[in-house]
Image (cartoon, rainbow, N blue to C red; front, side):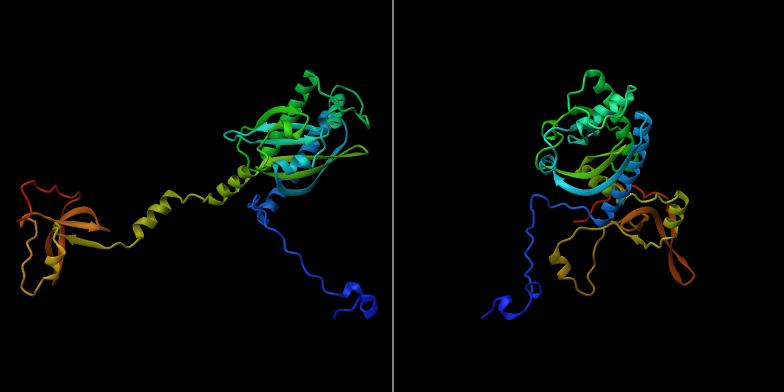
Length: 311
């Protein structure tokens, strides 16, 4: 009988704890390998430095960006992790229905636009819908970020990505289906003394396909080296008579002294074959005490129509 820890004198924390099994999520069978996650981390670090430089030049302020957690989520899970109202800039990818997302607070977008137009940084900018002129400025700013992201990812994204739209809620942006897998990189933007959260979303199938394509890329062999390799590869050469089709019963009943009639004329050259491919025509000859063949034509001679298999 197991006694209470207080009565037995054994501290509760020293008692063994049973590990709870972790349920497998069949809705998310794909995961990022450690190598792929490391490549993406380095790519997003490069993007963060370059985008911070662009924002600092555009807003004439001090902007610093650090990269946080990298995860693979469903689009619905990502939407649930964000506030109800936020700035969502979607960008389209050539040949792909799903879209990428560049997300940050609406107040941050308003503050950037104010600074781009000559105003000063405000600690608390209002959350409001952008005007048409402000949307044009935001599209230009986001377009530079998308181009920088494409270069930083080094071929994982198809070239030609462009800003598709500006929204104020992730579910209404409809960048992907609710159950689609997306790769999310969390960012932290430091604007002066203020710190805000941002994120980048990329369709997981596009990135995984990019990794697969890079893994299959093999440096092409120089033409001269390939030709020398083919020329130095040993092959088997054989002389062949014209083949004859027969029945299994005839083969099984063969005996010593039987004569097999072949549909090969006595004056017709033999076929010189390599790996069952006819490469030339040749006649039987001798070389010292050994049999040899004399090539009579570089291409196989046509079969005369008059030559038929004997009955």
